[in-house]
Amino acid sequence: MSDPLRPPSVAPTQSRRKHLWAPIAFGTVIAIVLATILLLSQSATTSCETGICPPPKSVIGLHVPWAIGGPAIERDGSLNQRDPEWPDVPVQGIRLWDTRTAWLNLEPRQDLWDFSNLDAHIQQAQVHGVSDIILVLWGTPQWAASQVQPTDANWLGPGSASMPKDLQDWRDYVQTVVSRYQGVITAYEVGNEPNVKAFWTGTDAQLAELVKEAAQIVHATDPSALVVAPAPVVVNSNPKQTRRANEFWDSMNTQKNG
Image (cartoon, rainbow, N blue to C red):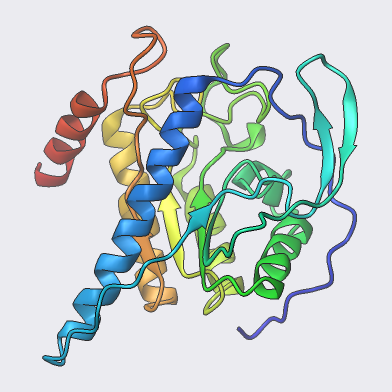
């Protein structure tokens, strides 16, 4: 990477969720599993092109939301400073989401960038020998949002689930991040649980457009990096807030083939 990572600085305070949703937590686990499978299958395909297929690799991939510590709003509403945490088991892959590394954290104002949290998470991962880093490209800043809905995740902020009002802002965000972390971040997942209104209030056609634009930029800027499809929540506990996963995939396949 041409621009070495700067030492982490004090990260801006980011509100955490006041309530934990079991379906979303379960969906997050599914997202990790899907992303890991995609990474491993891509690796195997590339290696097998030579005619020699190595045995499949087994890895453990996790979310480590408090890898660098930080301010957290607890369930009772109190604000506490969390100490850095890292799992006791060997981890070879991490997925960066709920780590204060969303678009709204990286570019809180247009053309004003803050990479301190993302730099610190990557440095912590490298210290612990992590080989695969998946960054979720998501979380529209309010200044870039086309709409604000009451269902937007309150721990991310107003407009965070919105389609950007200007597609060029999305392109600039993806291009800036991928250029900076070329050769460091190994995969980009476009979207987090987009069948949940808390995370996405746009249309399927708009989501497909964001995936297409991001994929083109990633492939052109860092060909070694993978693009991971958005993973929906598979549990449908509240039909008014969450679409069934099979309906979501059927619609996305229609967008892809249309």
